Length: 155
Image 1 (spheres, rainbow, N blue to C red):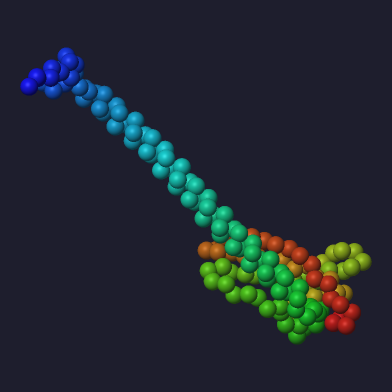
Image 2 (image 1 turned 30 degrees about the horizontal axis):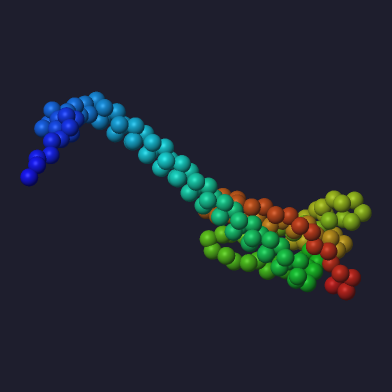
């Protein structure tokens, strides 16, 4: 049988006489990997937070639009009467939905004043500005405004 001779580089590697990495090179490589890992994890964290915020805002906006459409589909409530009642508000935990109604004078476009003693507005001629505020954790997420017009048979 013929013995195979290894070339000089392979022989040196097997015999332990080849040069390896120095300790400084290893430390620099590990530090570089660490910096890259921190940058990647930071980017992932930021992207994750942006996704959470976008999801929260989309949900709140959908709730606000649903609330506004729900009010528009209800019968018109005359807010100039002291016992006027209120529009039905959707309850959706953990979001808090608030609805504010302000009757508007169709001639001037100005809001009617609220009379505290009577618990009603000074007038309501069939146009109301509806403001829907959706908040979560005591922070306003979305504010949506729209208008409701009463039909002649409801007024």
